Length: 204
Image (cartoon, rainbow, N blue to C red):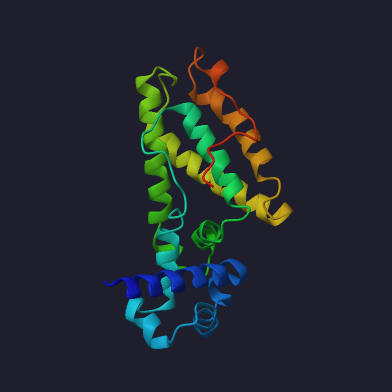
């Protein structure tokens, strides 16, 4: 794919993310997305066969703006990633649209949970390192807890969106960790894990 085609595809995804974020899957019309992207219908259908396929692309590329750490480092980094995500959801349209589509009952996520799986795999990587470093309780299952964390984070951000437009999400994530960490962290590691809403990786 040449550079011009790549730029057009990126513009369509950005425009779609804005419209999906504003109106949800059902409320997002193709013509509105085309007008926002300033492209023709032919250009869009060259890259995406349908609105559903475009929505899937937004879901799968929701983290493309994020500079996630290359190497897992354990529990503290896992906690920090969730706080950074909480802040990103307050202003990162692509991430927010991808997350919204993942919980939209009218969208393609009902048949495709790959976006959830991507985050679960990323979280599991941190937990595997945490196990190696002796930071986890013996009865903690890395894969199982990664799935639990994805579910808990998804529900927490959805409640924050409804209640406060994500303004209180970092504080809600701090509360989440205060309850979850004692269930997975070893007694030796638990006191050293910092859970503060202003913490987190800086991606900007």
